[in-house]
Length: 165
Image: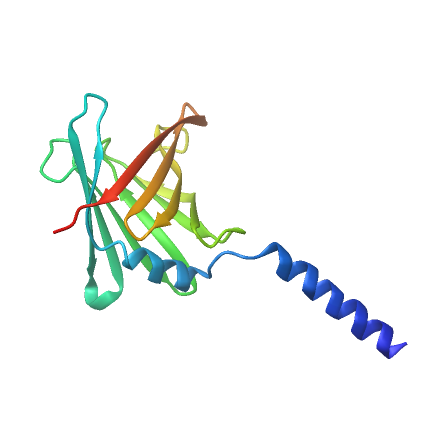
């Protein structure tokens, strides 16, 4: 009987391992810190749009600045809160949604989901989810899904390439 239990337990672990698991919150944060530097994408009219990542706070914070110097500049701050990885987005709309990292099955896809916000009512327009796809050392895609009138809204994709400085 004991051999059967051990065999079933080992088989279960093998099946679970085969499906894979994304990085822990701490591992995801370490992956994000590797984005430090300037990234660029082409806007709708072919214009250059930049995003800058900077590790700060003695390595405890990653600051993402979208469209630096622009009138609609926005900042997102990533940091650990105990065992959780949080991201607060300081939006040009004047609100500050906070999202929590949720590990998935793919180690190269980091998913953040809304947990709370300031300067906003629950049904107000805000960024509700963010998905960062690490496509290589020098390429990422960041998909931001909004929330409008209490419902899921459109998704905006940012396809970024690292600027060699």
